[in-house]
Length: 132
Image (cartoon, rainbow, N blue to C red; front, top):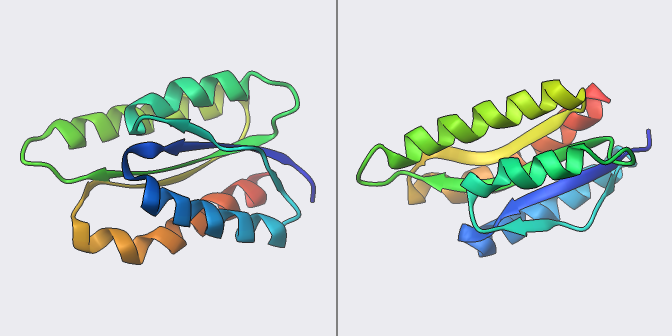
């Protein structure tokens, strides 16, 4: 299987997302997918715009989104996470291109993040590969 996969990364938790990116690259090799140069955005809220811009490109076959939405003291993260995920689904349908959701949260507590980094990154790539 060959495919060019856009990679959108939220930089709010850059150290953790860098680790996710490494595991995503390993997983992509298993499926012979080419991960394009990552596009770093400030946080999860900016993921849909970068994703939309990349899904428009004819040589992009799919995408993965990597990031973290932590649990805060208010409902802001939950509301933002729901909006981001809804937008990602809409973009996937609009462009008929698979998008792997590797965003941890919303509502992730610090103790939940580290154990989810690798599985979320790998699952995002695997989902795209299976849908291609």
